[in-house]
Length: 394
Image (cartoon, rainbow, N blue to C red; front, side):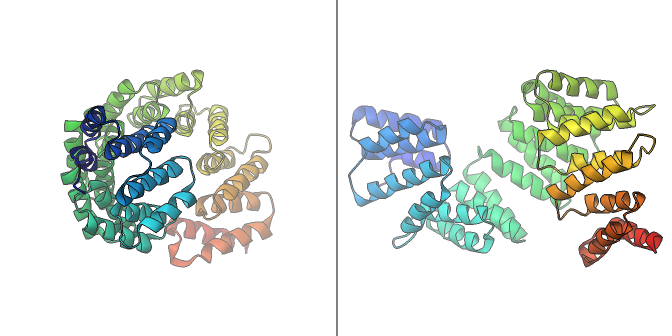
């Protein structure tokens, strides 16, 4: 069966024109199964599950190809409903002889989510071979190749993804982050500005650009981008918190604090904004340790899985011995930080220090020895602290 124009448009990433073409085809022929299935897929993308179900019902029957496409829409519905097992069963069936590229893409995506990257690479590679014109297939293959350390191949597929679908925002972002990680900051900035030429108000592009500029040491430029982002998204805690972070880096503590407090007053405080608030209180002249502790505790409550605020609060308590029972409280919050992130070395070494100060030498020694047992993977500064602590304990 030949590919309809609206199907080609949807595959190229032009969703709105593809939608318009499919709707026009349906106006001309209300029983056009290809148009019904294309619109059902778009309804899933839009999050309109009842509409997708209704369109699927109207498209029932037809050729084996139609039925396979209907099953792919059904798999997409399962994914949206948080049932990857049911979606995976459909993808696996349709990835067999004759293999469907979209099904192989679904298999590869689910394997990547399960961190089965080599198996995911094979499925996605096959999808790309079957439909080399699908930009999103190249994008997902590139992500897996980055995870596998296949950097050259990953960059090639990202470039192909952008060439095929210049409107695919994640391709710009992932490429920029990969370039930044490799120290190619100028190239990362260039690719983001290329994306922003087409999408000047795109949130993820602006956020990533602010981080890249900060990595280049251009704090003024980063703050300018962050300010634009906050103006475009004044109710986005991430955007406003990011601006507060750069205002703090500029030394504009009062402005940064006002941004954080405004978020808190509106019930929009985030871990980031509370953390910025805490760091400002710590850096004041004179410092405000009680204000900082309250902000760190608030950050802890906002994300029960984030170990950073608990670790920072514990550190602050260890540095504030004049407060009653400060070391005892430090041990409590550092134990919580370790519970949240058992593999992170930072809260473990801080907890060891707290235990030593409280006279629990056995626990302190146990924690320090466990860290030293990690071998060369342990950060040099933490290794030195652990060695020094064991020496102190005799």
